[in-house]
Amino acid sequence: MSMTINILMLGAQLTAADTVHLSVDAALQRAREANPSLRAERAAAHAAAQLPLQATQAFLPTVTLDLHGLRTTDPVAVFGLKLRQENFQAPDLDLNALNRPDAYSGYSAGATIQQPLFAPEGLFGFAAARRAAAAQQAAARRAAGATRFSVTQAYWDAQLAVHQVEALDTALTAVRAHVRQAEAMRAQGLVTGLDARLARLKASELEVRRLGADAQARNAFSALRALLALPDSLPLSLTDSLAHEAGTGACAAGALDCSVGDRGDLTALAHGTDAARASVRKAWASQLPSIAAFASFAHYSNSAPFAAGSGDWTIGVGLTWRPLQGLSGPGSVRAAQANHQAAAARLEAAQRQATVEVLQAERMLTAAGERADVAARAANEAAETLAQARLRYRTGASSITELLDVQAAVTAATLNLLAARHDLLVATAALELAYGVYDQ
Image (cartoon, rainbow, N blue to C red; front, side):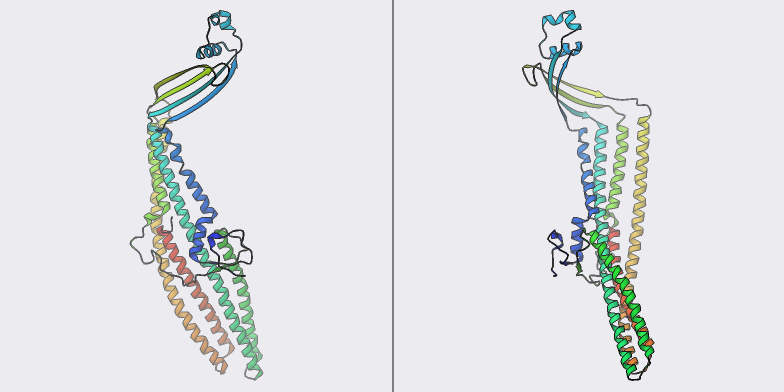
């Protein structure tokens, strides 16, 4: 049973008998949705996106609600509870009652609102949190680009492995035909039995190579399935050939709109540098006072929460300043400055490395294109040479050794052409990865 299935709709209904016909685009779409490493990066980016929300206490109000119940014989607590409940009586002024009160119960419910008016440390902390969140988002984009490249490379690795097996099958079929031809010519007395023996030895050599190629193909498909989060038992049929849009990537011809500035890792480092700069300002701001307004409302009762009793309110403005914290303040500033310098240096190093990666990828793409052209010409030449060698052997003008050597050259030329096309596709993808085209 073979069927075409939308790769995004894979589910429990698939059985080992189903075959998924998979294009490069479908594989990339599947990876965007299902790749475990990419899902982890997106989850980390989502978590980092909450950092600015956590830092909004620097300028948004904070509301605290509380409810308490207690029973005590502590003189101060009993005195305070009765006053707050408006339940203080004249007998309570007796010295014995004040010093050794009976056990007393009290319940309180309150709400407190605090509104920062000037909190420089928190404001710069909010700015640092925003940059840190943006850096994580950019890192997730780069992870998506790296995953796209890995899937593209794995797809063409698997397709190359399939075609290598097919090429060896073709070569093995041809050599077995040479064996039969040699045996027929021996029966006619035209050659000795050595020709058939040599052909069978070559067939055995190809069988051994095919076994290895088949194992490599299985491994390549397993690697592709792992990237796509598919069961290893699921049969895949790759529908895009090795000549698929070779060398026609967005940046293959040195397009002007390609720039390393699109790379997510460089963007992440740039945001990280900005976050480190904001952290320096935060460290300086920690030396300054903060001012906040506050208001509190409370209700007190003796028998139960919110029962008959009394309430009060308080409003005010407070200033908090810690002008001397040992040497922790200067130490924090110096540490933040050093971290900023390190972040800036890492960004510079990454930018230089990105430029090198682009140059290397462009050179590799150019070389891959040239190799593909040479390999194509060699494959055509080898095919014509094989036709001549077959004719020469059939007419007795050459030995079986020449024919087998030419057949081996044809096989090598075919495998070289497949490898060259594979390398051209991978080099195209590598250039787009270097430019950040894949980051999304």
